Image 1 (cartoon, rainbow, N blue to C red):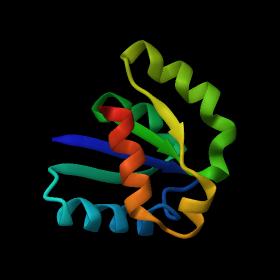
Image 2 (cartoon, rainbow, N blue to C red; image 1 turned 120 degrees about the vertical axis):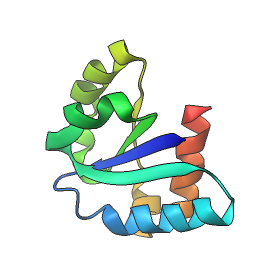
Image 3 (cartoon, rainbow, N blue to C red; image 1 turned 90 degrees about the vertical axis):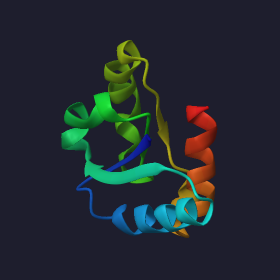
Length: 101
């Protein structure tokens, strides 16, 4: 099972996007676990994540979090602002899957 982690300021604003992504994953019969966490929990969850996507509001954390993730062979990327704002779970899922594979 692959794990996609979405990080935002408090872990709350991404929860709706997680639901939309999970709905899309279910439609596609994908065995994926998707969760949202605040940036403060990043180091606790990075080892279990296959990919970490940052909400646009915390993109300023990208360099720091990538530095932590890189030695573990993990990637950290930023969710497209339009996809985030319009809650396009399908597009965000596509991006995550393309980065994992």
